[in-house]
Image (cartoon, rainbow, N blue to C red; front, side, top):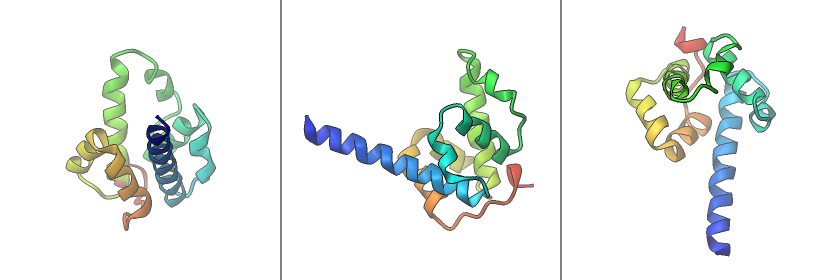
Length: 112
């Protein structure tokens, strides 16, 4: 049981560190990824969408569509394609660290 907790804790730390790196690369404070709700507002700023999209993320079923859209815009903001978006959705544990720690450079909201 303790072994599972250690693995779980390590995965959470990896994802937090990855988000911290993504936010820092985009010129936002890395600590923003630690604060609930505010982290979504900062993410919306990174991808160039208005803050009121936050409300759309709390509507059941509609939020799935908007999270996919947000991940797609995040991938494009770092110069990646739709294939990378699929990776962010289905293999987050691999693709978020690639964005946070890899060579990807922030290119502006949705790659503009």
